Length: 326
Ligand SMILES: O=C(CCCl)NNC1=[NH+]CCN1
Image (cartoon, rainbow, N blue to C red; front, side, top):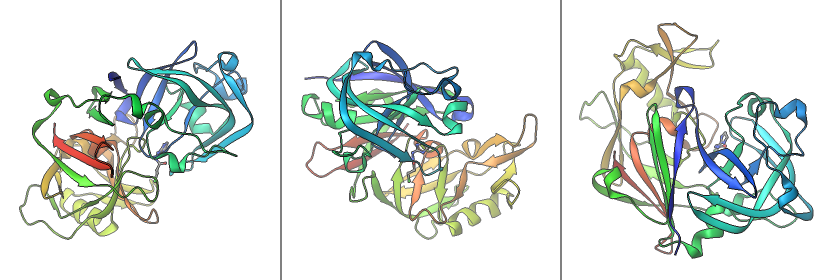
């Protein structure tokens, strides 16, 4: 049985985390994304004008799926599209011999401009893979039958290298016990229910966060508008229309944010929520918590995930998420 571990290296402000992946003879840095289900890469088919500075997948090592294509738009309105090959993909020593690899023939500006990222490796459910005419499986679904345990884990860290593991849990990476909650995969996401929250350690847990997804491909923590408002009232933040989000002082006084999941409380340090200065040297920061208005659920992105050890587990028949304090 296979198992393995790969580093997750943070970009500036932990905006995304990148992991080394070998596809055919190409070694690329991909953004592992539990909020989508396509494995795509800059390729020899991506226009030079869009791929300056990126490593590219050389599709010559692959077998083209004739007449197949893909096209994806993400929650932040970035997107890409192209052709489809099968090729050997290796992640931390775990090998998929015939993985669907989506070669980009077009990518949106934000992907071209982020030269550290050579593409994405989707880890949501294969039911939302965008390949036509026949949907393809994610890397995890492809290798799942060969894994020692049908699960992967995510240990993202603030401003430091973390890791993903496939096929095993590393108990040295967390403290205390793991709390498991059921996952509703009907929308293709790692969707769960989050409970009461508290700001700044006051025990009074207020309302309930509700339906949420665990999404390594989203940088911030998107919460219901009422929860977000309550947080910034205590944090001394304000909604800045020009910035299109809440901002707050960078000065280190931001309160912690705690949320109950499966009856256990998980805490995001206030320092994670003073996310990044509006511009270099500014004493005002863009907030790491923002309203989830219009999305339809909350998104527990990297700002939350780097505070916990997360286990994405399909070994029990129905899928479940495990969380433990880091
Ligand atoms: O698209 C989403 C949100 C799903 Cl609701 N997450 N994944 C991602 N990848 C690149 C930007 N965002």
